[in-house]
Figure 1 (tube, rainbow, N blue to C red):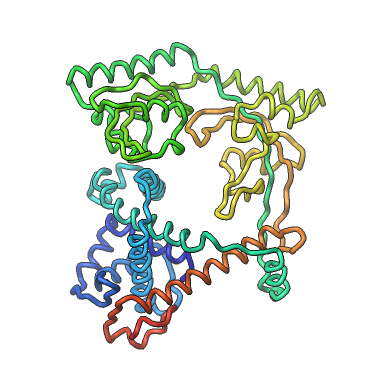
Figure 2: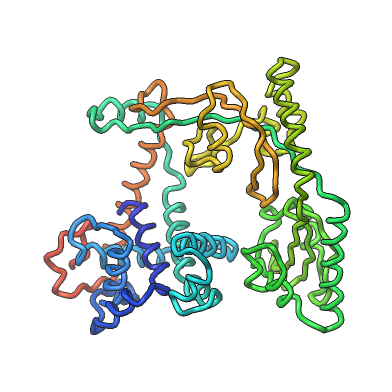
Length: 456
C-alpha cells in the first residue's frame, strides 16, 4: 500500500467522529457486524461504511473496488499498530496536539469560523478535540512505524543511474519550478512598557494561584497564548530537554516542587511562568502560561525603514546581500548561511523550494523578482509566532522541466529511495499477513486485494 494511501485512510478515520448528519445517518443505517478479524482486532461493517461515507464527502476515489479496498486498508493499519505496540513505538503528546490543531484549523478554514464548526457538529471545541485525539494518536503511530521500518534503506548513485536509464520518456518525473531565496530579517524592538505590562500580568497570575483564588490550569486555558497547550491547562506532556527552548528547559528541568510556580522566563516565543507536574527519567512534564508582548506599529515601521535603507545600500554596492545577512540579520536559522533559507523535506534539507512550500509572504515577495533582485521590505509572522520584517533576494530560479540525471540527481535519488521504501513496506505487510491470524467473511473471498494472503 502506498504511504500516501495510508495517510489518506488515517485522515478519514480522524475526521469521522465529528462529521455531520449525512455521515452519521449512513452509519446508523447499517446493521453492524464483524466482517474481518486481524489478530485480536475486529473490523466492523460500520467502520467500512463510515470510511466510505467520509470518502464520498471528501471526493476521494478508491483504486479498485471500494468494497474490497476499504476493509483492506483498515486491516493494514491494524497490522502497523499491532507492530508499533510490540516495538514500543511512541509518539509524544506534543505531536498529537499539533496534529489536532492543524486539522481543526483546516476545518475552520473550510467552514468559516470556530462558532460555525461547533454549530455544525453540535459539539464544543473541547469535545471535538477529545474525539480527534485517539485517531490522531493512531495516525502518528502508523507513520512512526513506517519510518522505523524503512529508516535503514539507502540508494547509491549507481542505483539512480540504472533506474533512470530504464525509464520510458513518459515516466520521467516533471520537476516543478523551484527557487532559492536569501533573507535579511529584523525583529522590531518591543517597547519596555509593553514588556513590563506582560510581566505584571504573569506576576498577577502567580499571586492568584498562590493565594488559592484559582488554579494554574484555569489561568492557562483563559490567558495562555500557546494554542497547542492552553486548552489542556498549559500541559506540555513528557518532553525531553532537546525539544524545548534552552531558557525554558533550564528552568523547567530545575523545578522540584509541583506546588511552586517558576520565576518569569523569557524564551524566543515570549514570556512564561511554569509549574512542574512530574519528572520521569530524562523527561519532564510541566504546564506553562505564555504571554507575547505586542509589537507597536511604530516599531514595525522603524524596522521596515531600516531594511529599506539596507536594501538601497546593497543595490548601490556598498556591501553584498550575503554580508548583510551574516552581520545584520536577526534570523538565527539563516544568518550563518549567507541568509539562504533551508527547506526541510522527508529526505533531508535542501535550499530549493517550490513557491507553495515557502512562507506565503516570502513567496509573494519573490514570485515576480528576477534572479538577483531584492524585494521591498515586508512584515510577516515567523514560525515562532513573532512579528519580523524581511527583505528577500531571489538567488536562483529553475523553471519546471522533465528531470535529467545531470541537473536533477537529488530528485531522481528521492524517487528511487521512495520506490525502495514502498517496496519494503509492501514486503513487510505481505510477511506480516502470513504470521497474523486473519479471518475474512466469505463475501470478500473474490476480492482482488493489493496484498496477497488475506484469504487463508
